[in-house]
Image 1 (cartoon, rainbow, N blue to C red):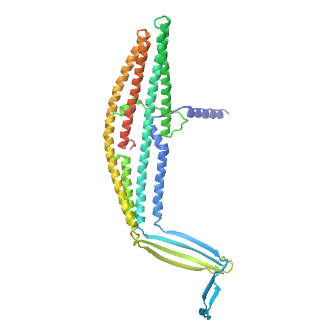
Image 2 (cartoon, one colour; image 1 turned 180 degrees about the vertical axis):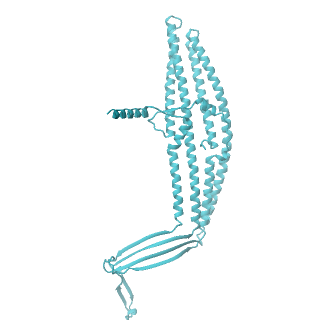
Image 3 (cartoon, rainbow, N blue to C red; image 1 turned 90 degrees about the vertical axis):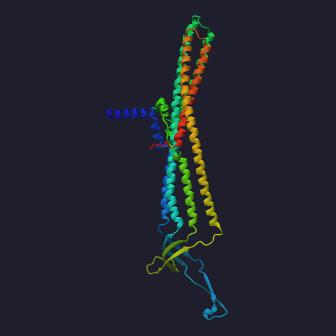
Length: 442
């Protein structure tokens, strides 16, 4: 009885822990979780499985095809035959007679074997190459998921830092009000100054509500990008300052590693295979076949009696198809395929130039964002000192509440600019990582 009670208690404790205790994630762990659970990646992996099955399907077209066939028919009216009466010694007349049996049946098997078809060999090559194309597409899906998760994780950290900052401001303002009320009671400051500080407190509390909402929404977005259950809590263990420090590491990537560029190049290869396939339609096709069947004819439905005959028939042969003239259709298809390849080449060239421009722009913007972040970090530190000095003076009645409010607003603005600067650095670095295909872990 005691052991059963212990099991129940332990089970209850486990359920409570699973339900209420948040799972902890570093950035790497969040990325790993997303790679294993994101639906976008799973769909891409299913595309790869489908592509592999397409290879099997295409290969099977060149293997022997065996089919069994059977049929049964009953003539409600046996067909009437009409011949010249001269064949039966009755010239000048037509002789009518019924010929055949009321019940007919046949059963047999046919084997077909493709001997030569140029399109078949091209199809094999295309189906194998397509699996490579889909594999690259999986990497692209992984890249998209990793970028979204990383961006959401960073935003969640930034919003948490901002929430803590606003929460500190609320606490400082509450302390100031309590001290000012004491000063007011002894007549050292006016009621208007106390009310002005209370106004600042309400503003700070409103900012705190907004900061809490922004942080909760950031966590929701992180769960969404990770494919993490929405009803479960999540805790982030990464240090924001360390992540910011990591952004200072210089990149030495190559735009030729860009996944979108790789996909465009492979699309061009697919167009080249399409041209080869169309050209192969000008070549002859050769197919062999073998057929063996049994036929039975009855005036009564007695096909299964052992003393009744079935007549066998065996035939084999070759079928050669030689394209001669198609009214210019094949020529037009070849020209269209060549145009498609040229279009793909131009798309690759255009995209390469676009990547080169993006590389220059993003490096410039990242340098600018890093410089701005340093300035905003100094700016907020200075704004904090100014605000703290104003609070100290207000506590002893040497600074009026209006000036404190101005310093508070100045600090809030500095914090907003600092947050924007952090986000800008994170985003520009992420875009460069994606450009160089540095998001996917080796």
